[in-house]
Amino acid sequence: MSLSIGIVGLPNVGKSTLFNALTKAQNAQAANYPFCTIEPNKATVAVPDARVDALTAKAKPKKTIYASVDFIDIAGLVRGASKGEGLGNQFLANIRECAAIVEVVRCFADGNVTHVDGSVDPLRDIATIETELLLADIETVQKRQDKLGKLAKGSKDAREALPAMERLAKHLDGGAMASAFERPADDPYFENLWREMGLLTAKSVIYCANVDEDGLQGNAWSEQVRAHAEATGAGFAIICAKLEEELQGLPEAEQKEMLESYGIEASGLESIIRTGYATLGLASYFTAGPDEVRAWTIRRGWKAPKAAGVIHTDFEKGFIRAEVVSYDDYMSHESEAACRADGVLRVEGKDYEVQDGDVMHFLFNV
Image (tube, rainbow, N blue to C red; front, side):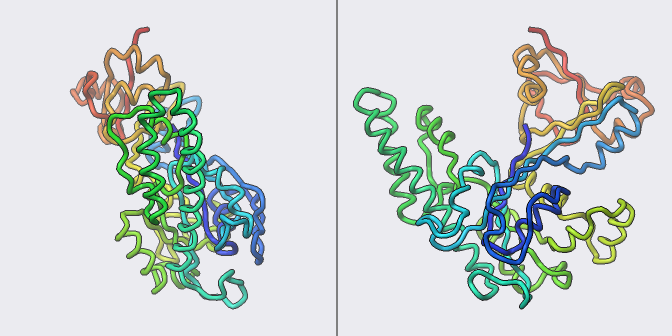
């Protein structure tokens, strides 16, 4: 599995600049006017992971494959988007498959950069964005409710799922996010409908405060956003999109030196991905050998067979056992044979809960 993140925000808050910086792809035009982005941009980027680099140096494989993240940038949303204002609402379908949404909000003052609402107010911007996401969800659920009502005449499953869909419509109409809706626990038909709808307000949220160079350690606006994120259980990251874009093209050593000069330990890409992994409860395990070193993304708490399934479904179906060594033990021993000799390479069965950083080999038979 790979992490997919949709980037949303008002026009002209630095979304496309951030997209360019995050993806190192200067294909999302950035300019000082609203609706500059009129087509959704998508890019797949490697997840920076020092452990993958270290495993590669040690195993010297023929190839190295990092975990990946899909970033999708759509046109800016404005108040009234659900009624046809602006362009962003046309592209919301492009982020329905995303696991998380990054809401980019402006947290800097600059008279030369136009704000669509005339002033900087990140909490107002968040309210505008989320109102439009909610209105889009209301429309989606209403259409599905109408269709379900017609199907209910001849389908028992549809008839039994209809009351829950009606409750969901009422829940959203009342201004509550889909993430707060209590889904029926014993209705697989409704659960399938839920997945198909991909409701935007059901997704995990990361609030991204876009600051200027003077605000990298936080400012009054970003602190408002941080407090809102904490109150709602969302993720939070501070980033200076302008600085991130300036970093592109610099050698790695110079990038590190520039970040350190601003008192930053990690790039914006790393910060958002790290926050995304934490918000979604994701982890990585590794496979390492002479042919390939690779990072695999799983959800925390997954058992060994399910984790094996991200490599191939046959690995899960025919799972026999897993050979496991922690990353630290792998790196502190000269070889895999030495890990085995010291007893730090373990054999685990179907009930083993895979840990972040495990180096694994799977045995299976189908």
